[in-house]
Length: 106
Figure: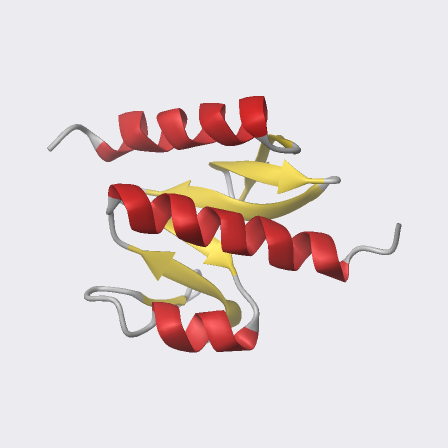
């Protein structure tokens, strides 16, 4: 399998070129933003995506998925760490982008 950072860069390029995403970072990790707010980032070898509650529940059923816990002991409830999977990375990145965009006041 290709190095996951290469896969993430490919995903990032696609979302920047074909959607409204822009480069961003959070916790020192490469990520993507929508209207200035991060919705997905790379946490080697996984991605971490901000999701609405029902998508969190579905994502956590994926093998190896877990709530993102940057400090250890206090997981972030809307952020899910998702192992590599070409289509699932893309699908969840789109879900995250849509969710974060829905939270913004235009």
